Image 1: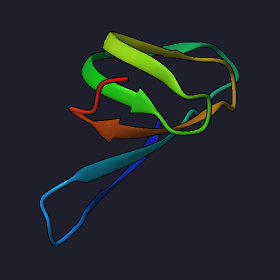
Image 2 (image 1 turned 180 degrees about the horizontal axis):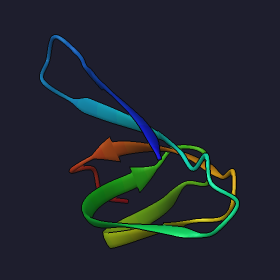
Image 3 (image 1 turned 30 degrees about the vertical axis):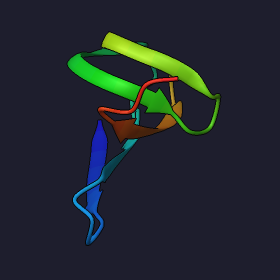
Length: 61
């Protein structure tokens, strides 16, 4: 898993996640909104092989 966290001046955070494995992976303890799919993430995020997600941390739909 490759992760990059960006923090804006207002304190909001976006985490970019890329699964670099050929198997599905789960990230635990993550809450927010996936900006690419507009879906809410509650506690766990499952990424398909080579999948990507941009999560706006703490945001809710």
